[in-house]
Amino acid sequence: MRDTLLVGGWKAPSLVDVRGRVSFTLWLCGCNLRCPFCHNWKLAEMLPGTCRWAKLDELVEALSGAARLVDVLHVTGGEPLLQPGRLRGLLEASHKLGLGNSINTNCTLPENMEQLLEEKLVDHVATDLKTPFHLLTGLSKSQAARLWGRYLDCLRLLARHGVEVELRIPVPRDIPGYTRLLEESLRQPTEALKGTNWYIVVNPLQGPPAVTPRSPDWCAEHCNPPRTLLEEVAAIAKRYNRKTYTINTPTAGP
Image 1 (spheres, rainbow, N blue to C red):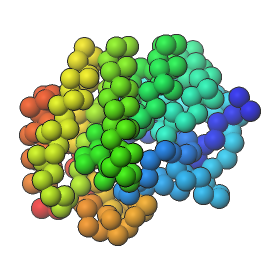
Image 2: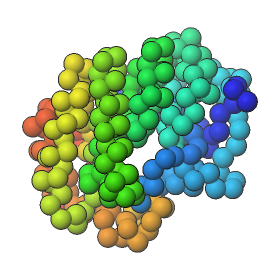
Image 3: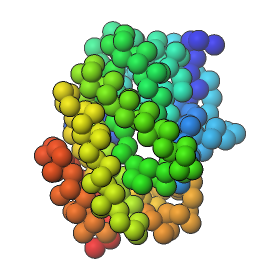
Image 4: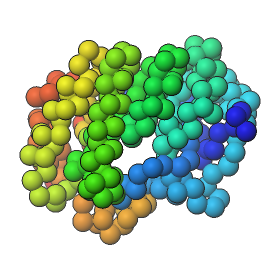
């Protein structure tokens, strides 16, 4: 089974998953978090009918067929780092095809990331800076505190290996003191990422009807932030990194 991956599917070409690049995007199954806004939660929880085992040969064939149209293999989920050993072969094949490798990860499994970094198989990482961390991960405060330390360890690893990082800020609404909490939470990742190329993407959390989140009730209260909040978040982010970009969505409020 080492030559198989538990997948939800793939898409190529994709213009929206890696900023400024065309990707072959592969969704893997399973996750160690329970983010209430997640719209891939069925894959994350591996519900019946959402996932299947795909052989490496099948995935490489699909990737090869799209290689002339894309710049990068982008692996997302779920949480891709739950399958590091199985993922290695695909990342190796992607590099042989002349493509870059990007992973969208919650970055709470630094030991699994390190395996791939040591073999120079990762060129770009996208990860969310979830604030407040316990609320947006769906975990208890004690669990979240432990994983926050692992998250920072993962960022330090990426910087040490010179991997480009897309730090995404998922923006909720109606969280008391949110902008103050965000400014506080930005300080440590900024320090951790010193020495590597990184940038920030401000990403408003979306709810129905745009997506079907894990918790519709949570999203009804906290998704679809107003544009004024997005502008405020972007202004804060630019104090830490001038390379800050904002995703504007039709669901954003006035």
